[in-house]
Length: 85
Image (cartoon, rainbow, N blue to C red; front, top):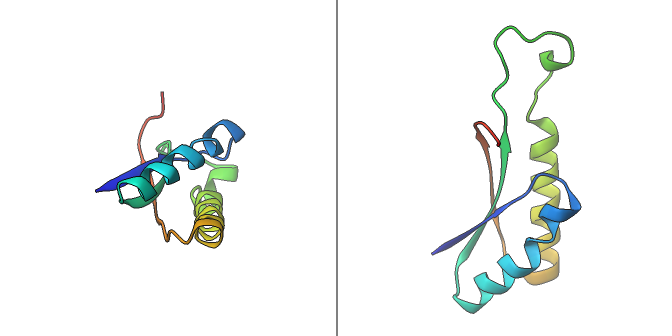
């Protein structure tokens, strides 16, 4: 079993950590912290020339370390590319 907890950096998304981790402990289940990146157009210039997923990786790594330190649960992390609607 795996509990997916979607995170986008917002306080609202962070609120999902508590219930998701509680469910993972109760089942028990693995935890995966997931963030979704909108596809970057191939014609993008300027700020898109840098790695558009860098802040997501940093954010998920920090969130994963926080979860592990506070709960002992070692979550996996993943970035998916797709439309967010």
